[in-house]
Image 1: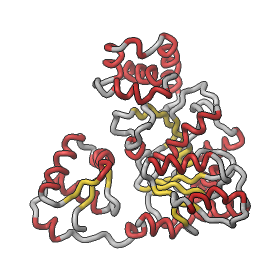
Image 2: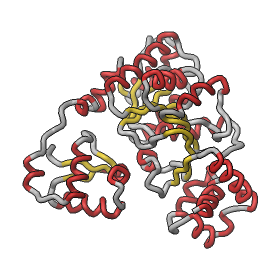
Image 3: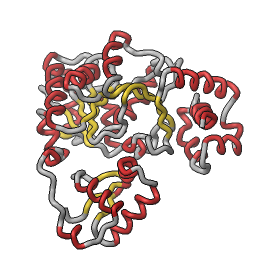
Image 4: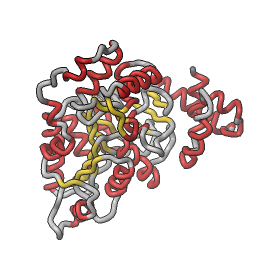
Length: 357
């Protein structure tokens, strides 16, 4: 397996702008090792040397790796066409939490924005089970969201624009260290990668793709938060934002999102819960329906039904595979059998839900 990880690192190193082309090649083979055997020009000697050093760093610092073909890869991110082929994580990260919200905003928020962001995360944490807050550790709204999550005792995931051998900005090192207990740091970048400007734009797709919903707290008329919101829209994620005064520079981007109908207006955590229908998941568990009682379900089918019943908005097949620890083919076959029996229904994007709940 070590050789396979070495080859995965080598293939992705220095090729981030060619990931879609690489994916087309990798999809034809069972492993990165087999792909290199058939296409030796995929990696250079320099890439292999870098991969060797990177793997040594990974082994020394207990870094987790998430390859796009593996079952531990973030299932939400896997739905995105430009998702990274390989991710590196440090800490106690659940990359597939029940609920994931990305909180982004300006690096220079107003006092109102700072206070709203903290209260929002604390209120959301108190009402939503198994919640993870995601952001980028930047100045302003990002770090406030991380700190509020840590204060609330819930996981928070940092998505940096560099490798795991540094923290940027350095003044937020204590927040990064605190995040490792619950959550941690997740990146597509290898060691030695500088926090270049274009890396911040690229990492925004992970911030957007990892979440069920993206919340823009404050944003000027232009900025990284609006880029993240656009990516979230491209990924069919729910986008929420906080309105501000028409003459408030810090809210110009938020007001723009509302006017363009790209984001839903929220004033508090309860608004997001209502829009996402998450408040229903805190109620008494629903009893077995008559339809389910009419069928003699196999243990595997009953396991899938139980998971789908608890997910009001449905679940992605990759998440079902992860939760059940069953083979993808087994889960797919059982779902299709139950769809024929009209117990479950398939939805666009690999999502499934119980029918007539």
